[in-house]
Amino acid sequence: MHAAPAVKSNAKNPLAFLRPYRGVFIALAIFLLGSTILNRIAVSDNGYVFTDHLEECALVISSPGGDSVKLTMGDLARYIMRVEREGDVHARAYDEKDPTAYWKLRVSTAKEAAYISGMAKQTVFDYAVRDAIYAVEAQRAGFTIDEETLENIHYDAEREYFNMSEKEKNSTGLTIEGIEENMKKETLVREYMIYLNDAVSGGVDVGSDYYEGLKQTYTIDEDTAVTGPLRLGYVTIN
Image 1: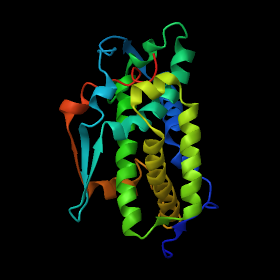
Image 2: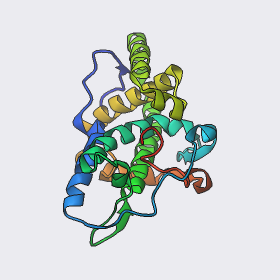
Image 3: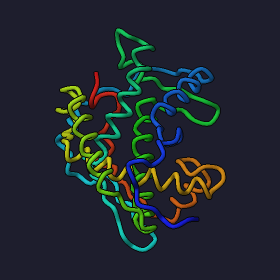
Image 4: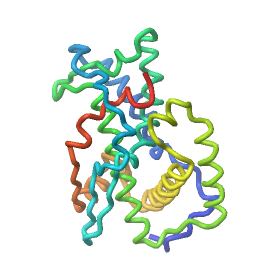
């Protein structure tokens, strides 16, 4: 591997494997075609108010060196918003009059049965954990973000915030500053994954042998009392 670079504004554009959410729901659409729909019950709006839980710790990711990263529910907000945005496209295609029906679907294959809401929720956790792990690895490898890129991230965060719907703003508690911090981590992760991808065969994203092997060296603790009531499909939409 070459020496770790500073992340610059003219760095490569994100690769396809770094845009997970659309791919997740395209894969899910294919999955539905080959699956049996069992029912549309049991997953619904349970009155959970996401903004009441922003400061609660959802996940603790501990590195082999003993350092730990805590992810609050607020830290998951941007992931939730993006997964719900992409899922909403498919939900409205499935049932325009009642898009919540899509999130309530329970589907089965020969191996498992799961609700789409729960599968989307797992996607949020998978990519939040991935970013936390790779951010630690990037920092250990000496990756930094240059000033020009930091300025661009600030403007990108402002633009994203002002393009959010009022419901997204009100239901997530996201701020420009919060989006900016998430974008900084996302930028480090993106560039570190590109760096790794040049040296590792078989990919480095969630599900790859490389990433899953690395993940096993970390300890991941989820507080299910905090995360359990969260229902995807009901935070920023519907």
